[in-house]
Image 1 (cartoon, rainbow, N blue to C red):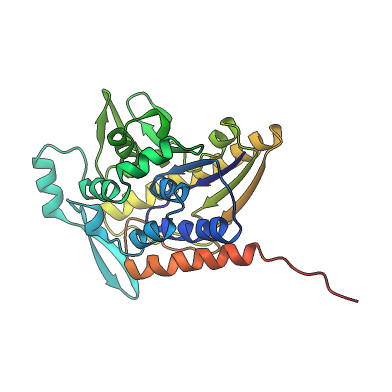
Image 2: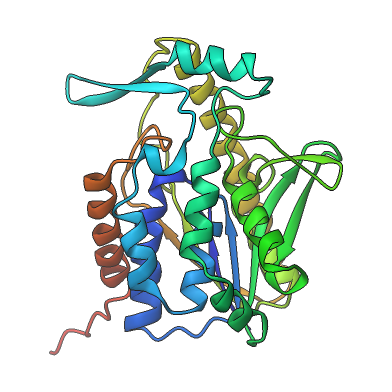
Length: 300
């Protein structure tokens, strides 16, 4: 059984979309299992439906207003780079409303619902494909994997949204008596889960470079310190997930094909820039094409 696994990575999901487009449309990869974490969870349902142009349009037109109904930070251009600052008014008002997080991402939930229709959900539910998203249960201190086939439309939309909620900047969701957050806090690359579910060949799209290529800039404020800290932790989690995935694959005679981002796309994946994400989608497509080019043997 073939599986497609897409890691977390916020706005960098546009690159993963480009890679997946090439694998599905040009190489005709037939996946029976789709697993995603965070931004990966946004992609997998549409990839399973083969509605790539639809999700490409979303990823190449989205901006911060599409994600946040309460945006906790400001974005400033300086010396050609984007820096985030604290939106003190929004954060203060959010705390006064009783929120536990700096910002709120209700707009993202609306976007998910507007993009994945109930008819599409039912089509997938009755198909042979399985779509699984990763969430972090903070109350039980465990990672959970939610299959589309096990839930109603409204419930699955919630799980996809929860998988993407990068707390404490986005909404903390209480569901079934537990507090849930971004799946990447527990499992950035669910390769092990794919193999445990029967995958014998896994195409894993990793929205990080294979080798660390940069040092983070010094923290300018509390938010940049938090994003740097979370970035550090998520990098370590991702590295561990990959090592575990390789180990499990070896002991189950499974094959993993890795598609790492060849360059650093951004140091802040919470910034959703339409022009950059359009470029990343195309770069992902071209990278997958380059990686899969067959090199003809030299003729004597």
